[in-house]
Image (cartoon, rainbow, N blue to C red; front, side, top):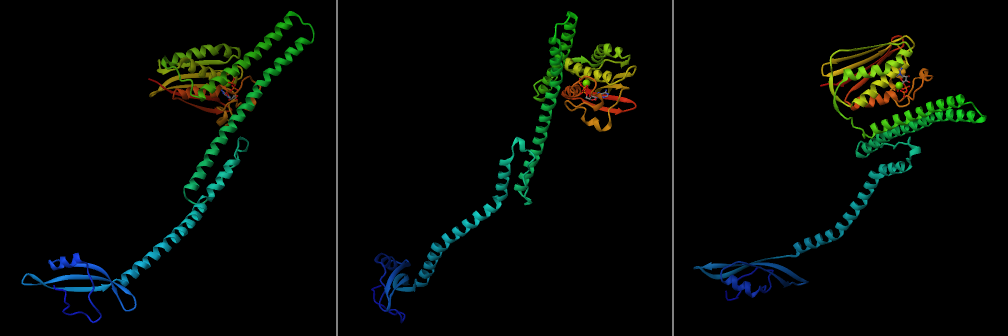
Amino acid sequence: TDGAIITSSKNIHGLAEISRKNFISVLQGTSRFDTVVYPGQTSDMTLRIFSTPVFENEKVAYIVQVSTPLTSIEAALNNLKVTLFLLFPITILVTGVMGSFLAKAAMHPVDNMIQTIHQITAENMKLRIASPKTKDEVQKLAETFNEMLERLEGAFTAQQQLFADLSHELKTPLTILRGEFEVGLKRARSAEEYEAILHSGLEEINRITKLADSLLLLAKFDSKEVRPEMKLIDISSLIQDSVNHIKVLSEIKHIHLILKAGERILMNADEGQLKTAFLNLLDNAVKYTPESGNIDVTVERKMSMARITIHDSGVGIPKKEIRHIFDRFYRVEKSRNSSGFGLGLSIARSIIEAHNGTIEVKSNASQGTAFIIKIPAL
Ligand code: ATP
Ligand code: MG
């Protein structure tokens, strides 16, 4: 405690100076740590010194100091610094380069897809994206995109076909009209002749008007613009009305048109629309049944459904054509010589489906055709 050294290790030359504040603390009885620079033989050495009091009769009698050089720790710390400063940027650089390489490799198929997509236009809808066999999201994306293209191409082709058919249907009556007017104007005609030409002209104009009306109705169904105007009706009497309406036509061809409708079958429906649908079906039955044939119409209740069957003994529909007859402008080849646009059935189906109903067809060349319609009843 008076500063005199009682004993020391051989390699200690002189006393390492610890701070005054710590020396006083040790004198008062607490152990302390110090870091001091000790002048060595070749170079200075940093020492970590532990000073601890030794008590005698509860008073500090001696101080024991133990020290260890910090060189190895400093060396380790220096090494760590170098490692951190060098290795860290190198690691970042390497991961960065590898990351960008990987990202490029992963994005390569997407790049290819983008290039193909750029080439797809309305005129070039057949193009498809090469789908990479990577079994990941990119492959799924490519496949989904191709499916979408498939659907779009289908819709687009149908649209083009519609345009072509429409132009064709418009052309026929217009050509007839022009022909008749030209013939009429060639020389002076009698009043009867002019009247005949006007009559015939009016027929063609009616034809065009019917076409425009039908197309407008279909377009409205497509855009879901016409919601059926539902009210409570009796489907049996609606069919009765339609049959009466068509009787005029069937009688001209001496067709036996028979309706079997018993009980009242109530339902919520759009009267005008349903009548259009059934008139279209009955009109077909008369049109495609030869003279003196039969048409049987039945209305009955089957559970919660009204079931209407229109069965004719007409020309029938060939098996391979059946799946097309509801398409717009589709007409079976042999019916081409009768008037019509091929729109009646697509309109009928749209109307029945808007009433949550179904329409199916059974046809056979020898036994004629049956249309079966089911609509939910009350
Ligand atoms: P539109 O009804 O527009 O005046 P359309 O009668 O030719 O013309 P749809 O009613 O749509 O057109 O019928 C499509 C085609 O289905 C007809 O052209 C005809 O070939 C065939 N078809 C429809 N109903 C019958 C039927 N009852 N018997 C035989 N063929 C039929
Ligand atoms: Mg028709």
